[in-house]
Amino acid sequence: MDVARKAAYLQGLAKGLGIDDSTKEGKLLLALVDAFGDLAEEVSDMEDAWSELDEAIDVLDDDLQTLEEDFYSFDEAEDDDDCDCGCCDEEEELYEVTCPQCGETVYLDPEMLEEGEMNCPNCNELLEFIKPEELDEILAEEEDQKD
Image (cartoon, rainbow, N blue to C red; front, side, top):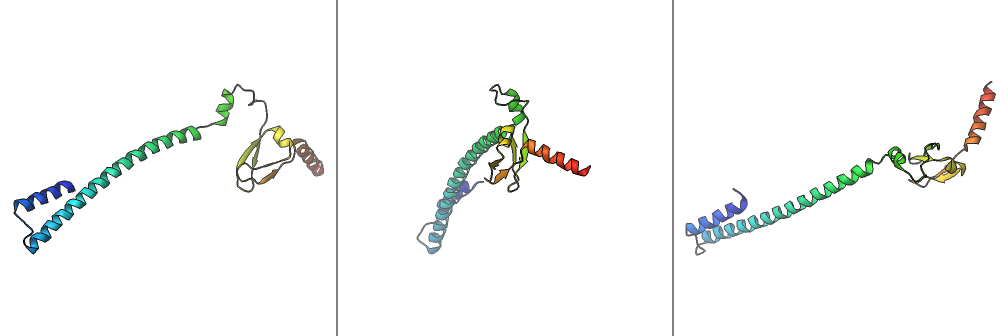
């Protein structure tokens, strides 16, 4: 039996037993029955509000799940294969750089690397690069020194 039914039962029982407010005990019992009825009504209202909130949370959860699936299923390689705009040249080499400040991995094309520096898109830290030609020269010099 839920709270509202118990409250209604107690109110009916008080009337059926003929409890009236002519005595101190009667006043107390009727006041308790009324208070219990008010509490039962409040509980019912709270259950209704909770049910509405639960439904709203379920809708938001479904929407968020859809967004997460769309966002996290993004695969750069798959999108490059589907791209017909010419901006995703498969022959173009990409360089991977990790920001020492925040650990973000950034992919650079040769043009970006030629600039020699850029700001990390995550933390705005200045990243400086050695150009590929300069790197080849440095590696060749190191190899010559070893021999």
